[in-house]
Image 1: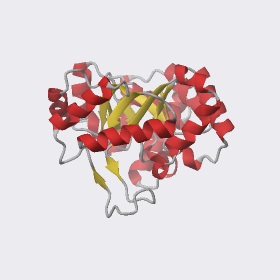
Image 2: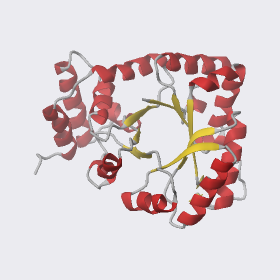
Image 3: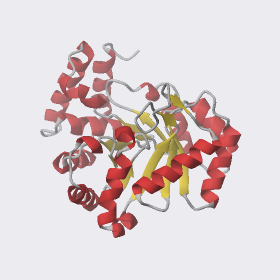
Image 4: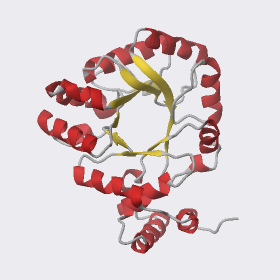
Length: 286
C-alpha cells in the first residue's frame, strides 16, 4: 500500500505530529509516500518537508513519489488565467526542482506525469526524463490517468520502463478494468497505483442508487468475511485484480491506516468480487 499526502494540509498537524504519523506508517510497512506539486494548493510538499527536516534519517526509509504537469490558478501563480497542463521540457525540470526544494530531499524515487496533456511532445518529455536522470534528481518515471495509447506513446520514446500508471479504482468508478488500462499493465507486469479507492468518501455517505446498492453489498460481504469494515472490503476488492494494484490510503488517522492494511488478510472469492461489480453496474454480467 501507499500513503497518500494530498490532504496533508487539512490534517492540521504540527511538524512533530506529521513526523510521528510518518514513522507510524513506516512501522506498519507502508513506506511509499504519494505527493504532487499541486496538493494543498502547492503547500503539502512543504508541510511534509518540514516534518522530514526534524529527522532527515527517515528519508532512507521511504520512497517518495511526486507528480507534475498540472498548472493551477493559485496564489502561487497569480498571473495564471485557467487551469491547464504543461509537459514541456522546461516545466517538468522546474517542477521537479520546486518539489525537491519543498520536500527537502535531493532525489525523487518516482516522478509521474499527473494528467494527460493534449500538447504532450513525447520526445520532449523523454528528453526531460533523461536530463533529470543524468543529474540524479529522479530515479524512476511513470504516469497518472493515462490511457493505454497515451502510455504506449510515451513508452515508445523512453528507453526504460515506465514504472506505473496511477489511476482511479473504486467500486463506483472502475472504467480502467474494462478500457484496456489494467490489461496493458498486467501484460507489462507493471503494478498500477490506485487513487480514490473510497471514492472521496462517497462509499460511506453517497445517496445515489448506485452508492446505496454498493454500500449494502459491501456491508453484507464484510459480515461474510468476519466483520470486515466497508473500507477493508473495498481495499481487498481493489487488490483482488490480477494487475496487483497498489491502493493509496488518504487518511491521516493512523488507526484508519492500520485498518486499511488489515485488508491484506481478506480473501474475496470471485463471486464476492462480482457481486460488488453487479451492485455498481445495476445489472448482471452479460
